[in-house]
Structure formats: C-alpha cells, structure tokens
Length: 76
Image (cartoon, rainbow, N blue to C red; front, top):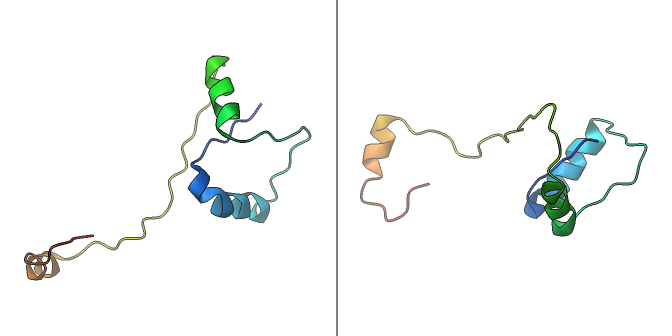
C-alpha cells in the first residue's frame, strides 16, 4: 500500500502533480479525514517514508532590504 497524506487545502495542486506524473493505482483510492485516522489506528509497518516539501513562495531578502522594512507592521 502507498499512503499519500496531505492537507486538504492542497488537493488541487496535489491532484495535478499526480496526474502530471502519470501516477496510477490498481485499487480504489480512499480519501478524507476518516481514511487518515483509520490508517494511523491500524498502526501500519512503514517500510519507507518520504516527505515532499513544496517550493517556498517567499523570496529571501538581503540584509539591506530587511533593514529597510523594520518599521513595517507585517513582515513576510
């Protein structure tokens, strides 16, 4: 079994990524909070784990840029 667990707010992006990479399964796909809870309750033996991290949407600022924003109420 392969378990793909991700936050629901990324459903569209995750689905697109799976389709773009031609991911296929021969069994039924089950989703939702209940499926994730059941997965953890079953206490599966995990043979391999990999965490996929998305690209940061924030760009790092230079020291000079950061100092120029010190009086701004919100920093991102």
